Image 1 (spheres, rainbow, N blue to C red):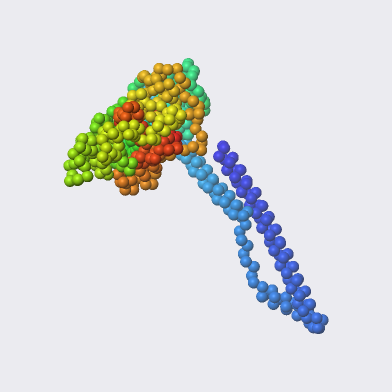
Image 2: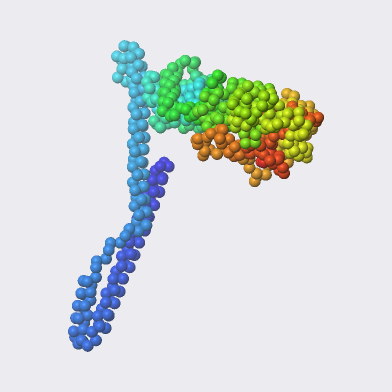
Length: 638
């Protein structure tokens, strides 16, 4: 009825639009005629005014001739362009034609379904009547056979609807939160068990339980029976919980389930007769097979779709779906992470001065250079090689070149002895402490850790220069003024740039930045406050350039030995080395070497240059990690 009403309204609107278009066309035509008459009259007046000397008798004929010639000389008016109203009317007419065609098609479908339902009713009735006739005794048939009849009773429940809602046990998808595959299966049968209608329908994105699926399947079956014109139906169900809900024995507690049960009851009320019966499990094998076949078909389609797509895997760190080709498998433990996360992990560890291991929590598998080539840039690979080399040198064997423009890391076993080369510059007395750098070939004293003091013994040098570098006293004074802290275990100097007061040194020692007491099992042993808001809240204008890397230059060729200063200058790293194990003169003064903006070059101490420092006490081979707060930041382990 609603479709017929809409179609009638559409026809009425089309008729009104057509009549209004005709009226507009008539008005346009009248206007054009009046305009043409006005033009003709104007032309006649112009002709008379241009011939004043002509005779009065000939004037009318001349004016008429002029008017006739001028009218013949005027071009034919162009056909009027279609207006917006006419275009809208054409569109409206096309919509009406499509609506009428859809209506005719729907009427034909309904008529076909009605004929099919009537044929099924007649066939079922005839089958029952034939069985009754076959059961009539011979003597009764001979006496009353011609008078036996059974009228067609449409109110008797001749049709049965069997249904089943089913969902797959496993998720078909790469993610755990992907919905399961769910299907609805319905079979509409006559009284003889002949299937009149069969429905297999998938449910997209279903999230729910069996009760919801069974109720949806029942609603689908009842609506299909109504569409066929069936008025009497018997619901065959093997799920007791749904049976009790439909019969009103139980009341649904969930809002969605209650809404679905109400929908079932609303559709059931549209039948003249509707019964529901509960059967044993296993009695609905036919619809069970329909549902199972439909699920298997949907699973096969999903598997085919997943296989057609590029394989992806979820990274355990960033939780992003990444191409399998961009997933790195750690050698030795087989943990899998995406290239981006692996690169960031290794970069931070290298800048912290430690050898990178597997990012998996609790895994201690060390990363290899060969395995890391696939996701690291050349510069980071060079740094990783340097860290591995530093880690292989024992702490007691490490020595750095004291020359400002070199400061290369060496082991005591590989330092060259100048007397091994042909040279007359050095004497035999120098053999005990004289060494030569393997890189810059500069001579230095292995005992004093300073450039070679020519013609002066170590005792004389230390007596003359009890404090080898004048700037060391300034550096110590600056550290006291700025409240820098030293690790009590390895003597590394640390400045808090931001974050809490829980510090973790490069050696692994954890302590309180305020009082210096040790943290045990991630718990403080003091009562100092854990943080200060000034160190927690950052200004939006501040930016941390210390951990940024220029991605555009990742693929550029990079020479670690030649351009290391450029790299660390961009990274904002500042290194300081402290040698506390050497006494100069009678005092126990400690010598600090500050590598400011260039880990190969010793800076000129003075002013603010000493503020950018990292302290390497007896272990200059380990690079500490930056605090990330700017030029005045050292490193902060939180």
